[in-house]
Length: 153
Image (cartoon, rainbow, N blue to C red; front, side, top):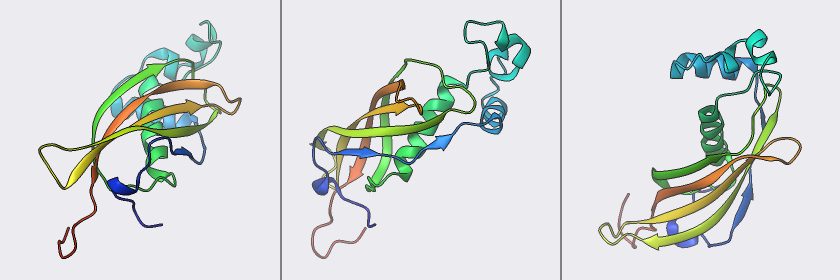
């Protein structure tokens, strides 16, 4: 599917992403990348004694997965940059959970300083296989506008 320009995006559009099952590999790789080796994420014995009763994926791993799922979705936009995230961690993501993201276009505005782009605000929810929202928030993206006839990218 071709990527869509700012003008083609409609407020209220909703997209559901494919899912991904969060594995021990994801959690341990993220621990190494982020240098966050907190035992709730990396130690079965420690995590078993917590209120969760088992290991929990990093919250920021959930955000990173949401961003990746967004980019894999059928949304297909000419995103140039992510400008802002406002994010809530509302529930745990356990190893073995399969998560999907729901995207809804919450708003859009033309750029005042750069006529070749606009800003799109997405409302996102990350849900587990039970349909529970485990993370949610907003993401503002800089999006390419359709070039005028004769213009090149």
